[in-house]
Image (cartoon, rainbow, N blue to C red; front, side, top):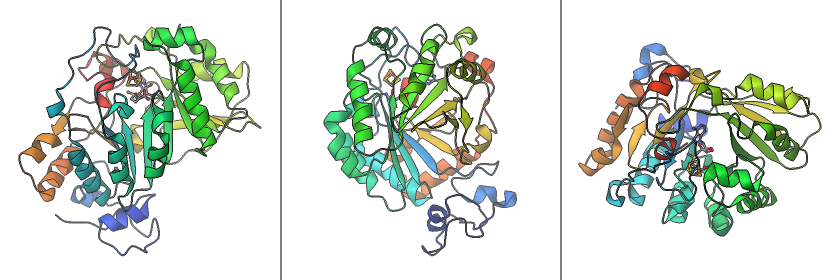
Length: 366
Ligand code: SAM
Ligand code: SF4
C-alpha cells in the first residue's frame, strides 16, 4: 500500500510514524494535505479529513437503562461469539495506531462490564504512539477497577451523569446509583484526572433546570461538564421539542453565571466556556444545532466489530468478518481505507437523522 507524505496533522508524530518517517521529526513538520493524494493514506477520507481518533465499543450491555440511549422494550443482544474477542480488539487497535491513530476511547454499552477490560486496556495502553487512552463510563464500577485502569494508562475519563438528584437519576436511568457515580467523579479528581469530563445529556422537561447546578460544581472541582444536545437514535423517542439547543442552554446558564469562551482545538467537538474565576470548565456538544462534521477525525468500531465512519450514518463494514475470513493486516487496511474513503462530508441534518434507521446509541458506542 502506498504511503503519501503530503499530509498535515496537529499530530505530526503519529503521522510520521505511520508514513515511515524518522521518529524524531517534530509534530506538524512541513506535511501538507494534498487533495490529489487524499486516497493514498488509509485514514484519510475524500474530504481531506485525517482520522486519528478511534472509539472502540467493548460491550453492548449496560448496568443502566438510560431512556435516551436504549429502547424501553430492551434489545436483542448480539451473542457473545459474535462480539469481537479481546485479541481481535487489540489487533485492530494496534493496526489503527500503526496507521497514525493517537487517541483511542473505550466505550460501550458500559465498558467496565466487559470481562477482561483491564487486560484489554493494558494491551492497548502499551501500543507505541498512542497518546491518549480514554474511557467513557457511567462510573458505577469505576472505583473497583480504578487502580488497574489507571496503571494501564487510561489518561482521560468521561463519566456520564445527567442529574444531581437521586429520584431523577432513577427515572432517567431506570436504576439506582447516583452516589456511586458522584463518588467516581470525585475519586477521578483525587487521582489527578484534570479535567474529569462529565457528560450530561440535556433534555427538555427532564434536567434543563439543573444546568446551573452542574456549572456550580465547576467552581472548585477540576471538571469539564459537557452538556450534550439530545440526539436521535433508534428507539429513543427523539423529538425536537425535547431538544434543548446550545443557544437555549447558554441562555439558561447565563441567568445565573457569566460565561467566557475558551479556545478549542481544531478537532474539538465541544465549545468550551468557563465562569471567570472557576476552577473547571463547561463544554457544549452541539451535534444537532451546529454540527462539527467539517473537522471530524473520528472512527468507531462497534462491539460486534463493524467499522462505522459516521455516528449518524448507517453505513458499516464488518471488520470482524474480514478478520475471521483470515484477512492479512494489509487486506484489513484495504477494507478500512475503502470505508473511510466513502465517508460523507457531513451528516444529513437532525430531521433526516431522526427519520433514518441507525442503531440505538448503546449498540454504537458513544
Ligand atoms: N455507558 C457509558 C456511559 O454512559 O458513559 C458509555 C456508553 S454511552 C452510549 C456514551 C455516551 O453517549 C454517554 O455520555 C451518553 O450520555 C451518550 N448518549 C447516549 N445516548 C445519547 C443521545 N441520545 N444523545 C446524546 N448523547 C447520548
Ligand atoms: Fe448505559 Fe451509557 Fe447508555 Fe446509559 S448512556 S444506558 S449508561 S450505555
